[in-house]
Image (cartoon, rainbow, N blue to C red):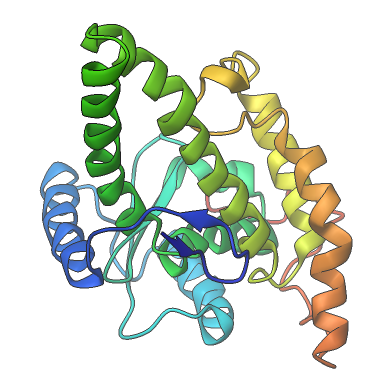
Length: 247
């Protein structure tokens, strides 16, 4: 057992960061192969926008080593960071981001997953579940199927939701306009009105995120004040919902 960075959450980790990095290399090759031909060129305005946002985020992100990013021309509303600092943004999420501050809040969240080594934690979880499953099967119930079902809802899904909440908490402190994060998740909630109930979801539903983000908002602003550094000015006018023409 160990404590997660910053938040201090107790978690089970039994694989090394080197193993996590190897998993990242495999995932990177898979993504590049799956989306071959749909990776935007560096001169595309959407690629340039992501680059501008990362240039402002990365100095305070906690990521170590070189960073590589790609924008995928796809309607999927998603973005993620693979171990090894490989960042992928789907063009479909840009309308929901709406502006560079909104994109920063999404990227801050995804970068936080990498900084907190959630992939390392996820790679360790099957070992813990196998151990618990074996003990329960031997001493309590020999119905492996029932035990697996209970473990899924009692351990695996809550752990995934805890990671998402942790990434929200850390990501707010990475993005350069925390206030925009509340607006982004509000737009995400409106775009995903048919979200499944939070209890059976791997991630906290977007409907619950705006209120959860708002609870951390004052703390995020306080972190800027405590460091005696003003929040950088935005490159966009947040009062204008049509200030980007990249989509």
